[in-house]
Amino acid sequence: MTKRAVVLFNLGGPTDLKVVRPFLFNLFNDPYIIQLPRILRFLVAKLISWRRTPTAQGIYREMGGGDRQLFNKRPHKLWLLRNS
Image 1 (tube, rainbow, N blue to C red):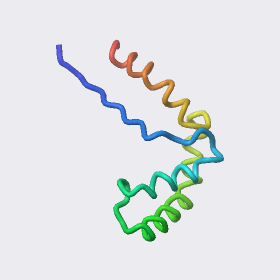
Image 2 (cartoon, one colour):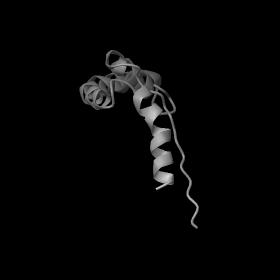
Image 3 (cartoon, rainbow, N blue to C red):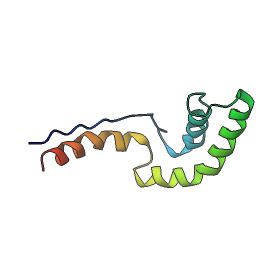
Image 4 (tube, one colour):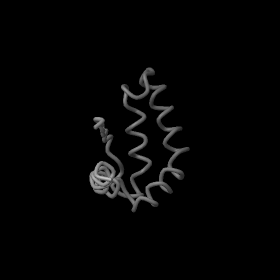
């Protein structure tokens, strides 16, 4: 029998579609995510969050409107995968 390991990382997510842009901005304005001087990181985070919001909203819409849907289903899917 081979051993398998599954590592889950949860960076959080927006609770609904209205807060996707602020979520993306906060994510990319983190100095551990983008290592630039503060003002440049702020500008880059603004640009990325503005540009990616429509696409990200579409993805979250497909998942039920927010990250909580994906998070709740993930352990069950892993259990099914492990026991198949």
